[in-house]
Length: 142
Image (cartoon, rainbow, N blue to C red; front, side):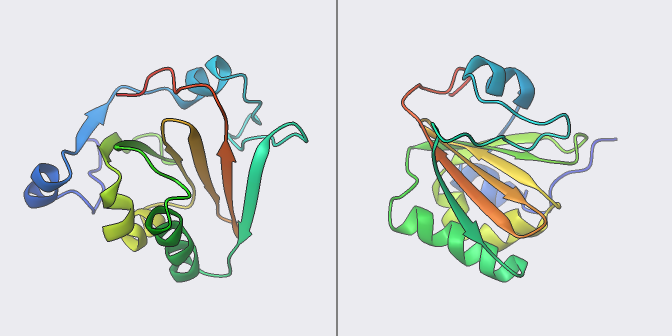
């Protein structure tokens, strides 16, 4: 049985138009020519338009994520959320879910990747949120 992320409720499914996706993070990163490690960390190069935000706890990571959305540093109509636990479903939702439920998203698993149309936000459990902006549109984006 696939574990359902705690963020999923019938009300949120409707309000944020949450859907589960068949999405392969490695295929997506390869399609966008973004290098990554065998354990899934994005390898940032000097050519990458990236920003690193350090955090000491999940509440701080949640506030950083929420402010990135609120201040439209990351934007778009929809996002794809991938947690490091591969048996959890990949979700597609309205971007407002990130702002309204950032703590729940951050605490669902050790690491996550959130894909927007022209950006990726990666949370690494050792205290980094990495935002990568690029020009190419997400191959699988809905």
